[in-house]
Image 1 (tube, rainbow, N blue to C red):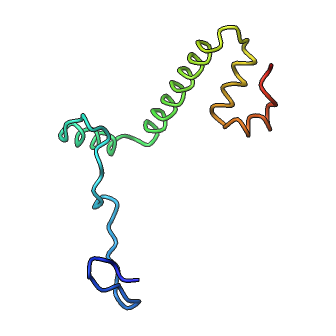
Image 2 (cartoon, rainbow, N blue to C red):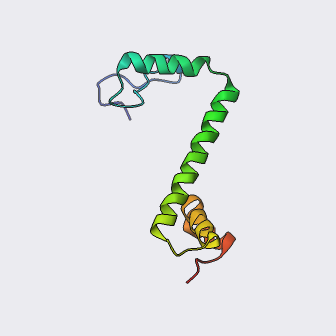
Image 3 (cartoon, rainbow, N blue to C red):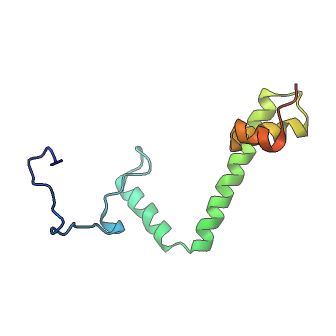
Length: 107
């Protein structure tokens, strides 16, 4: 099916131009970030050693876990550690998988 732009469809003999990753326009990470600040952030990330990037990812995961557990404690103040852990797994793994692995939530 030919594109609706009126341009002919590429044939098997027509080479397809492929953009390199750095040639693809990247959306800003945040709508309220100044474009120059965004450019600087990306430059910092490009220069950052891979080990530091992994550390940042690990820190973000740990922070998310801490906030999730705080939310669960707030919503279930009478729950013990085992129930909170089970509820945590329900959120992170999905309830269906959590039930298969850890069993149903306590009554």
